[in-house]
Length: 320
Ligand SMILES: Nc1ncnc2c1ncn2[C@@H]1O[C@H](COP(=O)(O)OP(=O)(O)OP(=O)(O)O)[C@@H](O)[C@H]1O
Ligand SMILES: [Mg+2]
Image 1 (cartoon, rainbow, N blue to C red):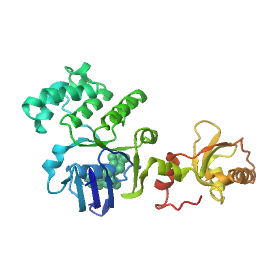
Image 2: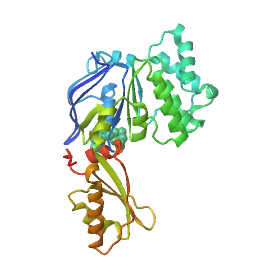
Image 3: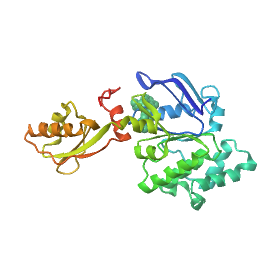
Image 4: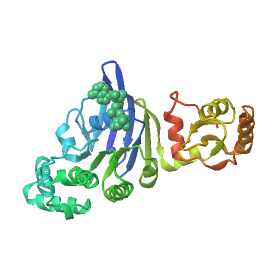
């Protein structure tokens, strides 16, 4: 059986369906990124998988145990970093981790060793005697990770492990997760797509409670390979420019990138038609008496696929 198996899982809150009949699996040893915009259903799914929340229907197995009937077993074999880490802020780091190891059933004789190695792995040895509430957010996050893995679970489930961290801390946590994934199955949610590209083998994208993509990173890259992303500057105001570009056959997913004075837009087009698409864009802009600067053409990226799959109407039909 895979390390994580989800079958037709649904979660409703009253009339709102947060998770809508999703199925996926994560093989032992895999590291999988769980992506989706705000409100997509990531946290809900992860909370169900870790036994913190019941589902409305469906089945799920983690580390070989049934999430709904063998919750204790699931928790023994799973490490979970929740979205907002409920650390005991007044406790000192190593005491907290020892306490957590005890709660998670680590036998007394192994506790010290497990706590030490979790602290080492997560690089919190130098703050071991500090009060958690006095640590920076990045360090607290590492303590949260040490907590998640202190009992040496087979499966780690991390809900946005890098949210709110600065770029250096993001890199540290990313490297750490990569290290951990050598001998542990990891499923983590994030909004940071480059992160996924750097550490994951597979990506699952969820949007409005439904899975819109589940594939290996190389499959995903192949899917975007036929497209180009084009960035342009124009003298038109963004709203007008987007309106005319949106009507073009060969131009799709126009996004507004404007930060300063000059309007900057990005769109996707098929690689084969990129020159025509740029000419169409220039014509369309000149029809509203605007000019267009030299387009910057690049390869489409996983991020673009994410945008296409999660923005606007669901189940976007790929036109390229
Ligand atoms: N306790 C709750 N009661 C009612 N609705 C809820 C509850 N928890 C979540 N929801 C709703 O379920 C949907 C999915 O929320 P969820 O937190 O799983 O999204 P998410 O993908 O984790 O988003 P984010 O990226 O913002 O963390 C949202 O529409 C949310 O408002
Ligand atoms: Mg969430």
